[in-house]
Length: 284
Image (cartoon, rainbow, N blue to C red; front, side, top):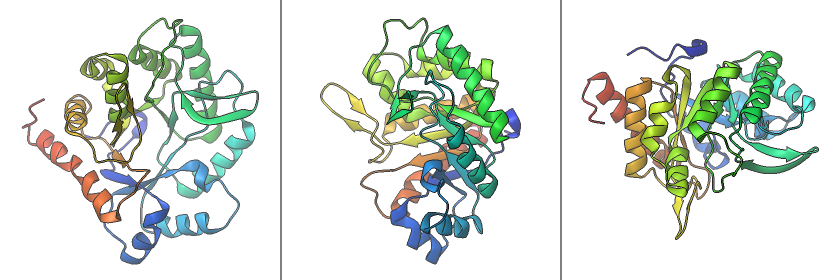
């Protein structure tokens, strides 16, 4: 099955997040990794160790940028200074696409540093899509938006989360970073069928997958990225790739980070499902 054609995205294989505890291992051992995902904001600086390490990584590896604070869903205009710094980094990394979250998190120039869920309304979709198009035109790179995990819902919502996602990406003509773990987390917190979500996503717009672990509490599930991927999430991933096809997949592990080899081994489990897909043996 060919790579996803939307916006000329290509299949990069299986990647992992570039994290500080692994810097020395990666630079000294030069492990075989398909690609690394970086948190853009960690490298939007004028110099110092972050950029020195990044440049060394770029000498050998493909890097894809993932943001956490563009806040397409906030009501205020995009932060132009943020976009200028982001564009400098885009030119440095030559990232094939740029991803950020379908959420809000800023008010009147004050940033929450959190990924807050949105009201699923047509008005919010219209504003969000306009800002995604504006950012894409300024940054001159394709954009994919990620579905977030959520722990609260708005009474004013006019549609489901997946209907809102579809409304935004169709209006913005952008891609999707489909976080399978976030779908699972939200489905448990809000009692919906995650497979219905996956069936509703426009497969041709999915540029990338995220998989991750989470933490289960008595009354809710929290997207903590500090555990291995559980079997139900792998099952969702298996189902997702039967719809989308072979697509770049990234394992997130951002807290209680184990050794590089352990994280990489967990990420490479995704290859089994990709191989089954190519051999037409997927059972989902």
